[in-house]
Image 1 (cartoon, helix red, strand yellow):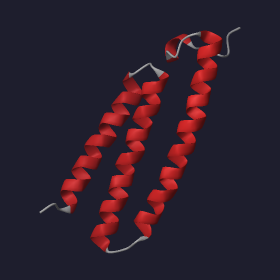
Image 2 (cartoon, rainbow, N blue to C red):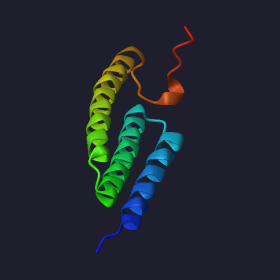
Image 3 (cartoon, one colour):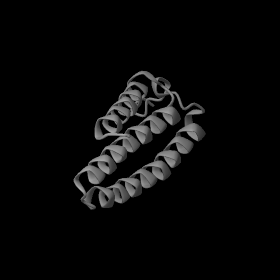
Length: 100
């Protein structure tokens, strides 16, 4: 039987992996994927607590988080494509928009 602690442990591991990816990776696409992983870890936590408490509020919040994640993915991909067209790279270290 799966308990609340198991769900929270998996969610914490996913969130830590996502955080490490954001901090240590330099590729913009991988950073966006790690942010998505972090949002999915939060979704798992919300669903686990919603199920544990017998309340539907957490599941409703998941729909809002998924909507924000979809919008972030669309806007983020558009920004990455625009940067690649101008700078011909998606490496964060090599992109400096303040320099001419």
